[in-house]
Length: 125
Image (tube, rainbow, N blue to C red):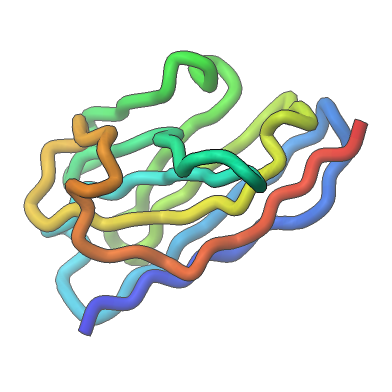
């Protein structure tokens, strides 16, 4: 059974940074493209970033380019989301997701096979 566990969320002031981590288990990490999504209260889930199985391809929501960076360490079975210059509108529950044999281009959450439980990010003004 594949499990994804996020960590690293918390409360940060506007302009600050956080790094989210998502540790996976249950199947070879390198067989998954990975994505990060977020959902703010009262809003739909939205795509944040994705990365290919080998890490060579990354993909970002246009609004997050330049502030967020996705990366992965296949030796540690972990994907990261570095978030800089955080804004109050970044406040949301953040989820990592795994796409079996994915390309790193999938932005639709329905294309992902496994999800973590989420980690809360709150940015104060």
